[in-house]
Length: 50
Image (cartoon, rainbow, N blue to C red; front, side, top):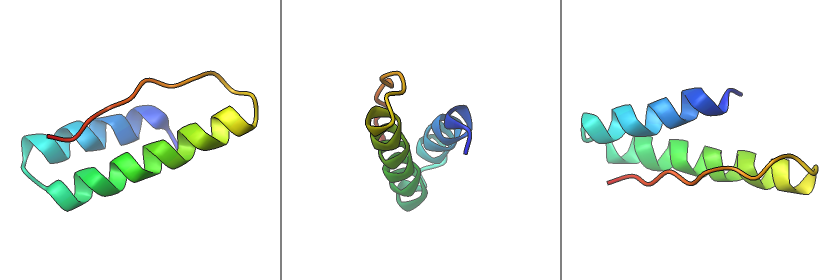
């Protein structure tokens, strides 16, 4: 899963007012970030859905 693609999805969903899609992408980003923290990966930047 590419983190940049999920970030783009969050932004695009916000742009087109697809709140459910944006929230799902945000949940996936959080899950991905948790996995990186547990495996010793780098910390990630947070993205919000408006």
